Image: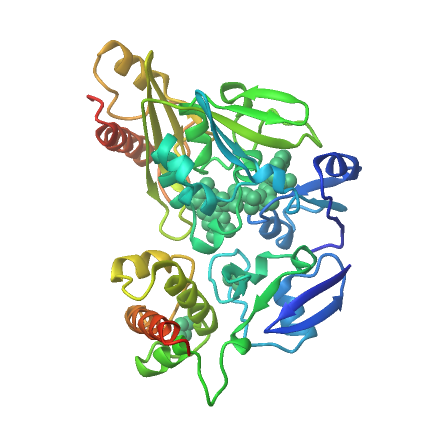
Length: 261
Length: 161
Ligand SMILES: Cc1cc2nc3c(=O)[nH]c(=O)nc-3n(C[C@H](O)[C@H](O)[C@H](O)COP(=O)(O)OP(=O)(O)OC[C@H]3O[C@@H](n4cnc5c(N)ncnc54)[C@H](O)[C@@H]3O)c2cc1C
Ligand code: FES
Ligand code: FES
């Protein structure tokens, strides 16, 4: 890694004041540190969020489940509050990476990074989530903008995510056998006024599967495969295979929540 | 940045550059070479250590972010005369061949025992080892060792040893 200075604020105010120049936030570091080690990323200043315990909270508030940006995957996976409000979200968090990754990686880091194969983005889309930041609130639909791209501006700090509590929710993924990232992952949420479907892994960035939503909400035939002009293809899986897997994951997620499909 | 740790039970103070990784501090500055580096991508688990009892990949931790925490490496678990029960189980069940992955496996095994208890089943152990790669054993004996080690650890805990 190239040298940088590390700053360890105790409060959000101190953190925002410490972010200056060529800087980055450090959450769990399980994306950022490997990227810096391989020099895909270099910064002069890292502002460590690990002492901002106020951002670790998990609370059920009325119609929404609030999860702090610094909530680690293991905390979401084992939280009684999450298990009671949206059990499928606890399962999703428990399926990210491996135990050591889950002991360190955070919700905020995952959605700030917006890896096209990350798990949380599909859930935020399906659960109509709101992303609270130091500068305001983004609806998930506007927040995710394709591969590694989000609505965040430089220095904008995610503080929490508010998930709409659905009637039922499930996330099904086919894991890449080495990295555990999703080759294709589908999140389905059922609300009183219809279903929302989020897809990850299969395209260049997480997105809503509007065709599947329309079929579910109008009782039409479900799409067998994901039709999209920007399907992901790499050495791990072809576009055609990923489109097929998305269809299979959709069926699995629907079966898990007892929605007809 | 000055960093205070309780390392294998004893306080240490390190003054190293901010970008120092825990694994490099352990190996290059403290001579604790039992913690291994098997990859550059945070995937292999050879570098696992316990931080406040939790298994973490020391290649993906900045030393200075651990100020005030307790770090336990393979060197802090047992001695050649008195192996930790998880180490003894790896020896008894031939849970290693070349030994490169072993420190990380033993640390992961201890975390598995602490999380799931004495009666942890095969499927759980296999699932919980997803972040640990071994290129020799085919994992079977590692899984057997961890199951036996979990029983031994919990029996020791029960008798207050
Ligand atoms: C071996 C391995 C396997 C993995 N498998 C999976 C998997 O199966 N599924 C999956 O989804 N992910 C997986 N991951 C990624 C893991 O979930 C990461 O922890 C996560 O993507 C990033 O979270 P972090 O807290 O580590 O963030 P960091 O690495 O600290 O930060 C990532 C980025 O987010 C920015 N950032 C962090 N916090 C904030 C904030 N609060 N506000 C604004 N910006 C912020 C940082 O500046 C950086 O750019 C894996 C990682 C590893 C190493
Ligand atoms: S060296 Fe740390 S995970 Fe491979
Ligand atoms: S014993 Fe050789 S890598 Fe595991």
